[in-house]
Image 1 (tube, rainbow, N blue to C red):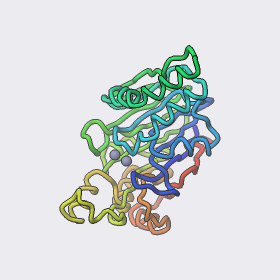
Image 2: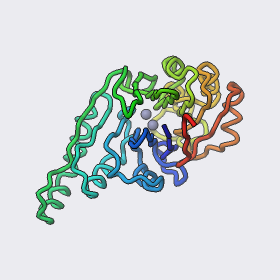
Image 3: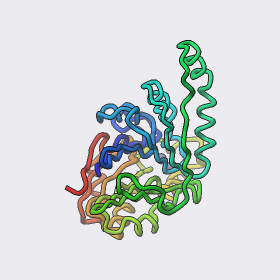
Image 4: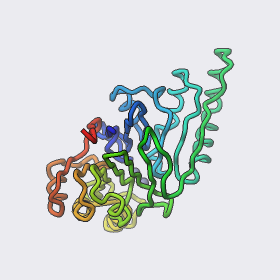
Length: 278
Ligand SMILES: [Zn+2]
Ligand SMILES: [Zn+2]
C-alpha cells in the first residue's frame, strides 16, 4: 500500500499546498480520497492519469474536498473512459454529483453533438456509506468511521487494512476519540492540522470577532498541540500532518506537536509519498 499526499492545504489558495486530496495505491489500483482544488494536476504530477482511476472516496461534503471532482470526471471522460466511476461518499453525495453534472450538461451535450460520437455522458456507481466496512480493494479492507466535524454524523475518516499494514486518514476533525480508537498503533496516521491562529481570516465578516472564529475552528479542527495529544493517545508508528494553513512553518508546527507526542512526526508536503509494508 502506498499513500501519496496530493494536496495538504485547505480552502485558501496556496501554490505550495493544493486542496485536500490523497492517492492510495493498492496493488495495481490507485484510488483517490477527496478531490480538492488542484488534485487533478497533482495526480498527473504524481504520474497517474485520471483515466487510470475508477474509484473516488469522499470523507465529507465540504467543497474544499470535492472542488476538483467535476474536473476529474471531465478529464477521465475526455480520455475515453466510459466505465462508471465508483463514488463512495456520505449520504447526499449522489445528489451533489448529479447536481454538478447538471451544471455541466450544456458542455457535455455540445461535446457529444459536435463530434457526432455515440458516447453518453459519464456514469456513476454511487456508494453512499455508513460507518463500518465499506469495501475491499485487492485484499485491503476500507472502513469508514465518524469524526467530530460538521455536518454532524456526515463527516468521516477512513482506515485501510491489508494483511500486514494499516493506514488511517482522519479527514477533517476536531480532536476525536473515535480517531484515537481507530488509529490505535496504526502504521501511519495522516491527521488534519489547522492552526487557525495563524490564518489571515481573523477579520472575516463571517464571525463576530477573531476570538469567536478561533473558538469555532477549535471545535471542528485540530490545533497542533491538540494533535500531539491525539497522537500520544493513538500511538501511531508515524504521524503525518495535512490540511494546513498557508502560513504554516513546518519546523515550528513539528515542535508544537512534539510538545505532546514523542513518536515520529512528518509535516506533510504535496506529493510526499509513504510506502507501507516494506
Ligand atoms: Zn471540512
Ligand atoms: Zn477541509
